[in-house]
Amino acid sequence: MHSITKKTFREALAKLRAAVTSADVIAIDTELSGLHRTASEQAQPADSPQTRFDKLRASAQAFAVLQFGVATFTWDATIGKYIARAFNFPIFPHQGKSVFGLNRRFLVEAGAIDFLAANSFSFDDTFRNGIPYVRYDEERDARARIAALEDTTASSIPIDDSNREFVETSMSQVDAWLKDTASESVSIAAENAFKKRLIHQEIRIRHNHRLSTKSRGRDVVVAKNTEAEREKALSGQDDQKTKLVAELEYLVGFRHVIEAISKSNKPVVGHNMYLDLCQTIQTFCFELPETVDEFKSQCHTIFPVIFDTKLIANSDPLMQKYVTNSALQELVSQLAQASFVSPDIFMHPDFTNYASASGEEKFHEAAYDAYITGASFLKMMHRIAEIPPGQRLNLELAANGAVVEGDSSEAAIRAHLMRFANKLNVMRSDEPVLNLIGAEVDRSHILHVSNFPTTWKTHTILALCHTHVGHSFVRWIDATSCYVAVSDRARVTAEAVGGIRAAVDARRVEEGGTLGEVRVLTHAEFLALESGNSSGTKRARTPRAAGETAEDGEIDEEDDDAVAAPVHDAKRARLAQEEVS
Image (cartoon, rainbow, N blue to C red):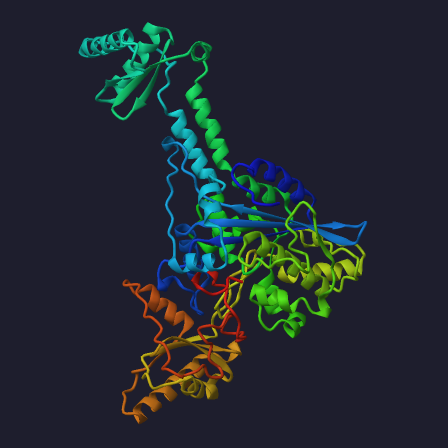
């Protein structure tokens, strides 16, 4: 569909629901207002799963979704092709009436805006025509506020002597106003909510709904009702509340899209989608929980089957033969080669023809990125599962509890799907996978080395470690500290760590330093030290000297994947003037 706006959203929603219902797979993508509030929230290779989630949670709570893309892919057996439909939704958190309490705030990162502007992002669509949204908890709270508004049909309150003069004086003001036909309304001052309630009551009783009342600050505004308004009031309808509820239901807006995707139980695909999922849940569903385990459960409940195309491209042995750069734009280019001609994907004529060979590439338009993500998923999985041309990949086999009876080919396909189902790519991590339905990863192969001289280089660290633990990689933190990821975790024993410490001490003494000056910690020791550091401050990485390049065994700052997989790659950092892949 072309240019979905808040005015055309209902029509688009009906088409999306139909597309989701018939889809084999659904791909999503987001464009955001920023990534990191501070440098300390950027990913570090030895982040524990909880630490990494804390950083992504902080990002999702601070920044906004500006655009959300959905692409559906439906197998058409009559032509042996997938039919694609792509929806591009501009998003904006409209406030609505102040009683709703929805005047939300979000941060904007200058680099993010520069990057999006450079990629022809339409901010006018977002801020003028963006589709509103209200989370479940926000809707509940807003409905409670509406219900708490003054009930003008409530039982009468007896007027005691202490309030009688106030009431009569107020009613005299109203009578005087009624004689002045030039004025449309009159404001009655009331010093507290109880006195406002008395005014609402007495106007209703004495004027039999010919007048309306509305609280405004410390005043009650009295105005004349039309006959139609009076008839509604006499029939017992609370028109104000009815209108407020209707407006609130309109503001729920884009959440209906997420509900449709969730209720379909269809596989949801994204590229490097950990942050996309955090943003989707935080923005449109619920406040993100505090722990990564709770997040995994929450995410799996909302989206029962998830596939991350970056994880597939990085981890499958067959894909590694073809894919040397898993950034989304590069992935699409590499999958355009002859080995990935199947399956055929045809764009439905009612939708922007992203599938056309002559069509314009629109990277960083959310719908386009969702489309190429879904297409990449189908191409990779058809190749991995060896699906013959013209045949459908049965993604129902990835569903929880799917049973395969007697068909060895389906058992093989399910085995391939389950290798990737519900696993998220984790960027810049020694363990680049978050299993949504599995246990946390083991980081016992990570060492933390610090307080060494600035003259030490990557080869210095590797040489000191190699005799004791074999092959390893270095990820610099700053000029005097780094992480060392050992390829064979079985070699990280107490004896080996002691050997590294002895080698480090010998080197420092030789250089004129002291014993114990350089600190070598296991990952468990490092985490214990970090948890006891009340300052929580972290040092910034000191850049290399001019002309100094990354060495073999060093994970460059521009490297995409984990310490354990040193493949030089473009990063998913679209909002930091790098590509969010």
